[in-house]
Amino acid sequence: MRRLAAIAAAAVVLAGCTDDGARRTPLPANPTNAGPASELPLPSPSLPPVVNSDGCQGLVTAAQVQKASGLSVQASAGDGVAAVAQYGQAVQSLGLNARARMCPFGNAGGDQVTVVALTFPDAAQSQKLWTTIKSLEAVGGVGEAALSDKTKTLLARRGKAIVAVYLVAAAAPEANHLSQLQSVANVALSKA
Picture 1 (cartoon, rainbow, N blue to C red):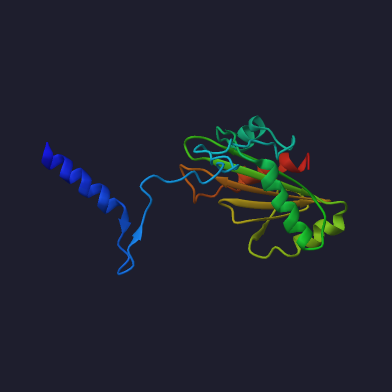
Picture 2: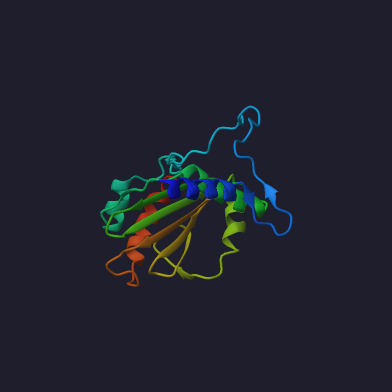
Protein backbone atom coordinates (compact mmCIF):
# COMPACT_ATOMS: atom_id res chain seq x y z
CA MET A 1 0.00 0.00 0.00
CA ARG A 2 2.87 2.33 0.90
CA ARG A 3 4.47 1.55 -2.46
CA LEU A 4 1.23 2.47 -4.26
CA ALA A 5 1.09 5.80 -2.41
CA ALA A 6 4.71 6.54 -3.38
CA ILE A 7 3.98 5.82 -7.07
CA ALA A 8 0.87 8.02 -6.96
CA ALA A 9 2.83 10.87 -5.32
CA ALA A 10 5.57 10.56 -7.97
CA ALA A 11 2.96 10.65 -10.75
CA VAL A 12 1.46 13.86 -9.30
CA VAL A 13 4.90 15.49 -9.09
CA LEU A 14 5.81 14.45 -12.64
CA ALA A 15 2.45 15.57 -13.99
CA GLY A 16 3.08 19.03 -12.58
CA CYS A 17 5.86 19.81 -15.08
CA THR A 18 6.45 19.64 -18.77
CA ASP A 19 9.83 18.69 -20.14
CA ASP A 20 10.94 21.73 -22.10
CA GLY A 21 14.65 21.55 -21.44
CA ALA A 22 16.35 23.61 -18.75
CA ARG A 23 13.30 25.82 -18.14
CA ARG A 24 10.93 23.48 -16.35
CA THR A 25 7.49 25.06 -16.59
CA PRO A 26 5.16 24.09 -13.78
CA LEU A 27 1.60 23.25 -14.66
CA PRO A 28 -1.13 24.08 -12.18
CA ALA A 29 -2.32 21.09 -10.20
CA ASN A 30 -5.82 22.58 -10.07
CA PRO A 31 -6.57 24.85 -13.03
CA THR A 32 -8.23 28.11 -12.11
CA ASN A 33 -11.53 29.19 -13.56
CA ALA A 34 -10.68 30.85 -16.89
CA GLY A 35 -13.96 32.76 -17.05
CA PRO A 36 -17.25 32.03 -18.76
CA ALA A 37 -17.39 29.17 -21.23
CA SER A 38 -17.31 30.00 -24.89
CA GLU A 39 -20.54 31.38 -26.32
CA LEU A 40 -20.09 29.37 -29.54
CA PRO A 41 -22.09 26.17 -29.85
CA LEU A 42 -20.24 22.90 -30.13
CA PRO A 43 -20.06 21.55 -33.69
CA SER A 44 -22.66 18.97 -34.54
CA PRO A 45 -21.38 15.42 -35.00
CA SER A 46 -24.17 14.77 -37.52
CA LEU A 47 -24.25 15.60 -41.20
CA PRO A 48 -26.47 18.40 -42.52
CA PRO A 49 -29.83 17.28 -43.91
CA VAL A 50 -29.96 16.01 -47.47
CA VAL A 51 -31.42 18.59 -49.82
CA ASN A 52 -33.86 17.38 -52.45
CA SER A 53 -35.11 20.03 -54.82
CA ASP A 54 -36.82 19.91 -58.19
CA GLY A 55 -34.55 21.20 -60.92
CA CYS A 56 -36.70 19.45 -63.54
CA GLN A 57 -39.75 21.66 -63.07
CA GLY A 58 -42.06 19.45 -65.14
CA LEU A 59 -39.80 19.00 -68.17
CA VAL A 60 -40.09 15.20 -68.29
CA THR A 61 -41.39 12.53 -65.93
CA ALA A 62 -39.87 9.21 -64.98
CA ALA A 63 -42.71 7.44 -66.84
CA GLN A 64 -41.90 9.38 -70.03
CA VAL A 65 -38.19 8.61 -69.73
CA GLN A 66 -38.96 4.91 -69.06
CA LYS A 67 -41.16 4.71 -72.14
CA ALA A 68 -38.69 6.60 -74.37
CA SER A 69 -35.53 4.84 -73.18
CA GLY A 70 -36.81 1.39 -72.31
CA LEU A 71 -34.96 1.65 -68.97
CA SER A 72 -36.79 1.21 -65.67
CA VAL A 73 -35.68 4.43 -63.97
CA GLN A 74 -37.05 6.66 -61.23
CA ALA A 75 -36.38 10.30 -60.43
CA SER A 76 -33.07 10.62 -58.60
CA ALA A 77 -32.80 12.52 -55.34
CA GLY A 78 -30.52 15.50 -55.04
CA ASP A 79 -30.33 19.25 -55.10
CA GLY A 80 -31.55 19.82 -58.65
CA VAL A 81 -32.01 23.55 -58.13
CA ALA A 82 -28.33 23.98 -57.22
CA ALA A 83 -27.25 21.95 -60.25
CA VAL A 84 -29.48 24.01 -62.53
CA ALA A 85 -27.98 27.22 -61.14
CA GLN A 86 -24.56 26.08 -62.35
CA TYR A 87 -25.86 25.65 -65.90
CA GLY A 88 -27.38 29.12 -65.77
CA GLN A 89 -24.09 30.61 -64.59
CA ALA A 90 -22.17 28.84 -67.36
CA VAL A 91 -24.53 30.22 -70.00
CA GLN A 92 -24.28 33.72 -68.52
CA SER A 93 -20.48 33.52 -68.69
CA LEU A 94 -20.92 33.33 -72.48
CA GLY A 95 -23.06 36.47 -72.49
CA LEU A 96 -26.28 34.50 -72.95
CA ASN A 97 -29.41 34.09 -70.86
CA ALA A 98 -31.39 30.86 -70.51
CA ARG A 99 -33.81 29.09 -68.23
CA ALA A 100 -32.16 25.82 -67.25
CA ARG A 101 -33.86 22.62 -66.09
CA MET A 102 -32.20 19.35 -65.14
CA CYS A 103 -33.91 15.99 -64.67
CA PRO A 104 -31.81 13.10 -63.30
CA PHE A 105 -33.19 9.54 -63.35
CA GLY A 106 -31.63 6.24 -62.35
CA ASN A 107 -32.06 2.82 -60.81
CA ALA A 108 -30.21 0.47 -58.47
CA GLY A 109 -28.87 -1.49 -61.45
CA GLY A 110 -26.77 1.47 -62.56
CA ASP A 111 -28.89 2.76 -65.45
CA GLN A 112 -28.87 6.56 -65.62
CA VAL A 113 -30.64 9.13 -67.76
CA THR A 114 -30.14 12.85 -67.25
CA VAL A 115 -32.02 15.42 -69.30
CA VAL A 116 -30.88 19.04 -69.33
CA ALA A 117 -32.86 21.74 -71.14
CA LEU A 118 -31.78 25.30 -71.81
CA THR A 119 -34.54 27.59 -73.04
CA PHE A 120 -33.31 30.93 -74.37
CA PRO A 121 -35.31 34.14 -74.89
CA ASP A 122 -34.80 33.77 -78.65
CA ALA A 123 -33.46 31.37 -81.28
CA ALA A 124 -30.41 33.59 -81.96
CA GLN A 125 -29.03 32.91 -78.46
CA SER A 126 -29.68 29.19 -78.82
CA GLN A 127 -27.88 29.22 -82.18
CA LYS A 128 -24.93 31.12 -80.68
CA LEU A 129 -24.43 28.44 -78.04
CA TRP A 130 -24.99 25.67 -80.59
CA THR A 131 -22.08 26.90 -82.74
CA THR A 132 -19.68 26.36 -79.82
CA ILE A 133 -20.32 22.59 -79.73
CA LYS A 134 -17.68 20.80 -81.80
CA SER A 135 -16.99 17.34 -80.38
CA LEU A 136 -20.03 15.33 -81.49
CA GLU A 137 -21.25 13.92 -84.81
CA ALA A 138 -24.33 15.36 -86.56
CA VAL A 139 -27.33 13.03 -86.49
CA GLY A 140 -30.94 13.35 -87.61
CA GLY A 141 -34.25 12.27 -86.18
CA VAL A 142 -34.66 14.94 -83.53
CA GLY A 143 -35.17 18.71 -83.52
CA GLU A 144 -33.78 21.08 -86.15
CA ALA A 145 -30.24 19.88 -85.48
CA ALA A 146 -28.73 17.16 -83.31
CA LEU A 147 -25.26 16.00 -82.32
CA SER A 148 -24.39 12.71 -80.66
CA ASP A 149 -21.69 10.19 -79.82
CA LYS A 150 -24.45 7.56 -80.34
CA THR A 151 -23.68 5.75 -77.07
CA LYS A 152 -24.22 8.12 -74.13
CA THR A 153 -24.81 11.71 -75.28
CA LEU A 154 -27.17 13.57 -77.57
CA LEU A 155 -27.68 17.32 -77.90
CA ALA A 156 -30.64 18.60 -79.88
CA ARG A 157 -31.76 22.10 -80.84
CA ARG A 158 -35.20 23.32 -81.83
CA GLY A 159 -36.02 27.04 -82.01
CA LYS A 160 -34.95 28.68 -78.80
CA ALA A 161 -34.27 25.43 -76.89
CA ILE A 162 -31.32 23.07 -76.56
CA VAL A 163 -31.75 19.72 -74.86
CA ALA A 164 -28.93 17.44 -73.73
CA VAL A 165 -29.57 13.78 -72.92
CA TYR A 166 -26.97 11.67 -71.10
CA LEU A 167 -27.76 7.96 -70.95
CA VAL A 168 -25.87 5.08 -69.36
CA ALA A 169 -27.38 1.64 -69.87
CA ALA A 170 -25.45 -0.46 -67.35
CA ALA A 171 -25.94 -3.74 -69.23
CA ALA A 172 -24.31 -2.35 -72.40
CA PRO A 173 -22.74 1.06 -71.72
CA GLU A 174 -20.80 1.27 -75.01
CA ALA A 175 -23.58 0.00 -77.29
CA ASN A 176 -25.32 2.21 -79.85
CA HIS A 177 -28.17 3.91 -77.94
CA LEU A 178 -28.95 6.56 -80.55
CA SER A 179 -32.63 5.63 -80.89
CA GLN A 180 -33.14 5.82 -77.10
CA LEU A 181 -31.30 9.15 -76.93
CA GLN A 182 -33.40 10.56 -79.79
CA SER A 183 -36.65 9.37 -78.23
CA VAL A 184 -35.89 10.97 -74.84
CA ALA A 185 -34.72 14.20 -76.53
CA ASN A 186 -37.92 14.43 -78.59
CA VAL A 187 -40.04 14.17 -75.43
CA ALA A 188 -37.98 16.88 -73.72
CA LEU A 189 -37.94 19.20 -76.76
CA SER A 190 -41.73 19.12 -76.88
CA LYS A 191 -41.78 20.86 -73.45
CA ALA A 192 -38.55 22.88 -73.49
